[in-house]
Image (cartoon, rainbow, N blue to C red):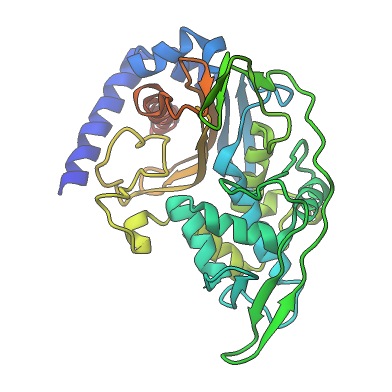
Length: 380
């Protein structure tokens, strides 16, 4: 009942907003010209917030899918920390690797050598998308290895990606991956050996050093924080991964992910599954817990008519969301990727960031503005 009321109010707001915004040939111009204070606050200080946005209109013509892309300040040479957004290609490539190994599938049980957590590839992928679980991601990272991830994406034409480390763990940069112990059946196991990967080289990019200081072991260092050894996953690459996953038929065979129809359906289901649908407590893990665009500033249920296939990232004051949003009832579908840095004090590793006051409200409002435009274009 409550989410239906919320959505009714939301749609009424969209109708009013649409009347206020003049028609434009560029949807991002319309969205960013909004008088919504959550958008205006960021637009008024673009350099401070390091905003990058990419939007794709989806057009269908006699069974063919066509893309019309719009960029705002997208520059793959300007660094931003991708955080958990890297989990999407890692999850897809884990499924791809399973196809290359005899006797293994997504429900195969395994554990990392030296770890007591027994899991399956499917369970870890669901955790990655439902609540952005770092440990689940790191287990798939051990399964793949840095070099294999980077080479696979490059061979598909997804450029400028450099996955160099695990997430939120003390052994983040160790170049040797840990072996996996695989259950062939209830009583028989085998070892999948680890790999030795390329030593990380510092990135040389614009804005690779940020802020005025950072904490290291509780000591404030008065100099910019250096991201040169960290993961790189720019906007165009994120968008490219999403396009290939949602619309594989729009790409050449060698540019696609080598996953089966059943595997693709599984990962799409995992991407749009809400935490409560994956068995998590709905009060702690509300619907928009890891879905920032459109609904990130509300803890109400997301309407059943809207499906959001996405992966967010948030760390070091940077918020990013890459999403395919589909409202089948109203024939609205689009891909939107956006990143924003919200660290007003310029200090990193102090856990004082403006996620809830600036970042998430901005991404939520941006998503609603784009939805508004798509809902009403062509007289919808």
